[in-house]
Amino acid sequence: MNFVLGLDLDGVCADFYGRMREIVAELNEVPIDSLPGQVSFGLAEWGVDGIEEYRRIHRFAVTQRKLFDSMKPIPGAVPALRRLSNEGIHIRIITHRLFIPHFHQIAVTQTTTWLDRHGFLYHDLCFMKDKDLVDADLYVEDAEQNILRLQEQGKPVITFTNSTNVHTAAKRRAGSWQDAEAMIRETYYEYRSRSNLPLPTGPGKEPPSGSA
Ligand SMILES: [Mg+2]
Image (cartoon, rainbow, N blue to C red; front, side, top):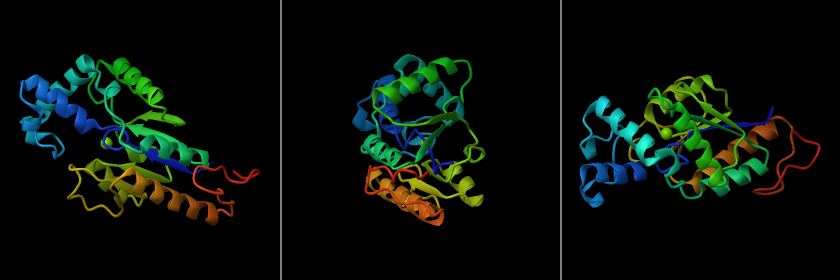
């Protein structure tokens, strides 16, 4: 089996908070600049009051504004994942996008359309809440609850830094996809060396043939 990268989407590959800011400003008929760019999980800084209101806005965003098909990719994610995949990494997206019932078809369709349209290279797509139950050699995450749970279980995780996790006791952090790519590659090369597998000849290059 190849080295598996367990990859979160919202806040790691997709600019979830940027798009939600536009939608909340539109819904409240306020200028976007009146909503702070730095938010915490749950969006209290934008006046979202509790989990039920968060769910209502999220449902509106997905069903009426195609949230999962209208976010910008986080800069650098697409080419970094292409290079890492070329080097032999198996990319397994793990996302908790089905947390509101009765529009899963829309959520899944928007997700796959977006991934294909932006040229994301990936091998598996898992819609799972409990990310630790999906096997991977290394995870990239931005949600505090998931980061802490993976760390508690001794699973290697890179925290993709944003305003929702700045206070999280993260063991490893990446502030950009440039950082994340380097950290993923370092862990992957260590894995190949331990497994006596030849290293790729350079970034984005396949390992010498005959190897896993
Ligand atoms: Mg996330």
